[in-house]
Length: 548
Image (cartoon, rainbow, N blue to C red):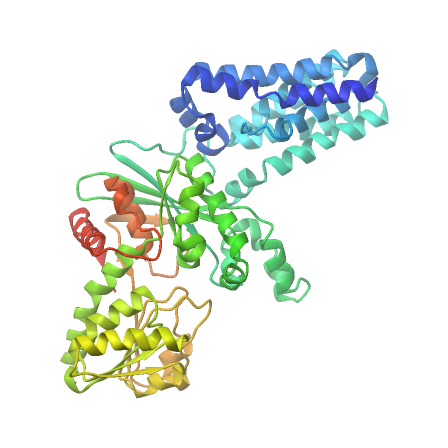
């Protein structure tokens, strides 16, 4: 009999009646309006109070009915039914695609069902009181919902009920903690919406976008409080780096930060959510299938957070055929790899660099320049731009055959310039002016590769130039693709571009979201000249300043 009640409770819990009601009453997709992502007030604004209330009450009814039906099996049977109903809500029926919330209504309903099944009221009331007090004190609905099963399980320890029921009730907070883990992480990072401080929604004056980042090194993981407790264990050697990397591969994308305070010249505000899954660059390169899967999950999370656009930063920009696979999988949100504005910032920065370099007393027509990563779109664009202006040009890349084809194009266009090719990075020591834009997961230019007094423009992400290069006498390293958004930008993470600045690919995401020029998003390996010009023009109009 207990088995029958348990299966019935799972099926009742799996019925997405709250989801159906919210979709029917609001006319919207409830997945894009989750109160546990946006905050209660924003969810009410999107779905309407009637739809949200109906969804909650129907979920509550699921828990109440599922557990009450099992009351004849005693409290152990009713407790097992509560666990089964919650599991059903979280996981659904096999093959059913309907999305599910975290199940606060089911937890409340299960509590009522346990009271019907014989759990004494003195052990039920503390759970309700703790939930209300937690919400009033913190404003976090997720924390309040989680407190309900936790306090219930603690209070039940003193209740005159069978030990089996007490043990089963501890499964509820364990399951809830797993479901609310992302909310708990956002609370630690300070990015969780709370009562009175909901997340903003897209509007004519409020632009909302998202940007997918990843740690450049294992030290970047410690910026998030949810991971920082691991730092002393890793540094002490208790937990090997390999274990951290293996753990990182199991994490799905999460919201780790926000950028706010960006205000365009026409008065609109732009807020950007920073999403991450803690894969290091070498992991993204080594496991492309996993990287594409995580990028797709991040796009779905961005849509659930209310973003209209998601940008793929650093190594994410090259996964899935440079974003094409992500866009196909999640057509509900616009995806960009940021390539057009990145190329635009390079095009805008190079004339200034060459002007300042010449002002230092050196004749460009007598200078040897080098371009590292010359087979890439951005680096080859740099080579085409500087080739007519220098005396000699060294193209460096790994694929010799492609490199020779690129060199042949440049030689035909610039017959008076000596153009060399090399697959050995050491060849750049002959150059006084170096431009680098590779997709390597680590530094490729070290002190032994650079001559004294050389200028280096580094557009690699992560940086192509090792920090030790700055110690070579007279060397100047200029970071590329750095943009200052308009207004007073604030954020909780160090993106390694300096205070108040962002990479060009992130700036493109903001501009694309603000202008809603979806036909201009950067996808795939090709970058159109008209898109580069569009971003350069709109960046000036909106107040974005190119720094390097």
